[in-house]
Image (cartoon, rainbow, N blue to C red; front, top):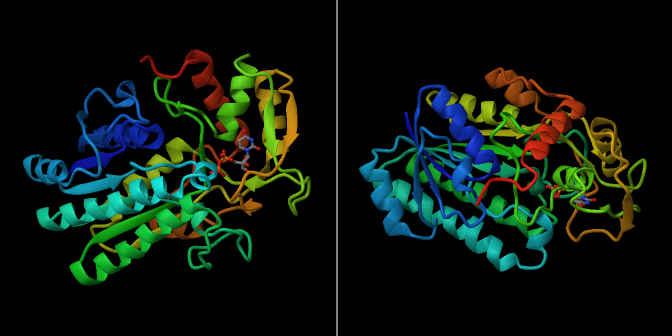
Length: 327
Ligand code: UDP
């Protein structure tokens, strides 16, 4: 297939682009490089630098490259930031997704795999979280993605869009030596901890120690980026026979912030000092996925289900690329 990967210069999009190429697909990456990196784009993918808000550019691209399917990663992702500037999240994530959907409709591209998120669930009523559980985001990031999921359902019903929505829990790790996490600035827990281990920062802040969890810190379900990538390929294939496909993607096991720090200490051999700090706005206490549905329907199986191997793979990347991708 000829697949358009929006945000394919970013952390997860670039890994999926590589997996698509390995599986024999043709890949066009569309990215404005505001957060992504030219060097993260796989060699055999075409990179088109452009903005998701540019409808004319999307129209032209979908037609001229005869795109069969779109994987949509381009988005703002920091939940904490969304509680300071929600407007940026609704513009970039919600409004730009609508622009993409309209362009797909006009170009008769019927197949979409959408990057969704555990943030849709907010504070869940039960754990592990299943796909049909109530959706009550506690931050504007989650809301901006939930609105897209709702649009997708209507586009499916009214226009016959075939789509998969993959709700990632906490993506982490690196799947090959030359592709890894390099956000600027970095806000995610595992890379922040590894920056301390590299001597780039003196301590890591623990955001909130008074959550209703066993050690008072937030609990998350970490999933290896390569395992996420394989789920995208399975979903793309499955869309030929059924739609919509909505899946939670995690390992079904939660780790507190303190536990993640502990694992990173043992992987890196660095003491990783911590400072207990106030809560970050919008953080749910516990997010753990049930991924039974994607295992059952698509035969998805994580290859790196344990946190230690996820942190080890991230550590290999960060040690070799302490400054991320070259500018
Ligand atoms: N976190 C933290 N210190 C940091 C970064 C994150 O304590 O420097 C916490 C954060 O509050 C959340 C968890 O670690 O409870 C995972 O945060 P991250 O930003 O990695 O992912 P999110 O769950 O927001 O998608």
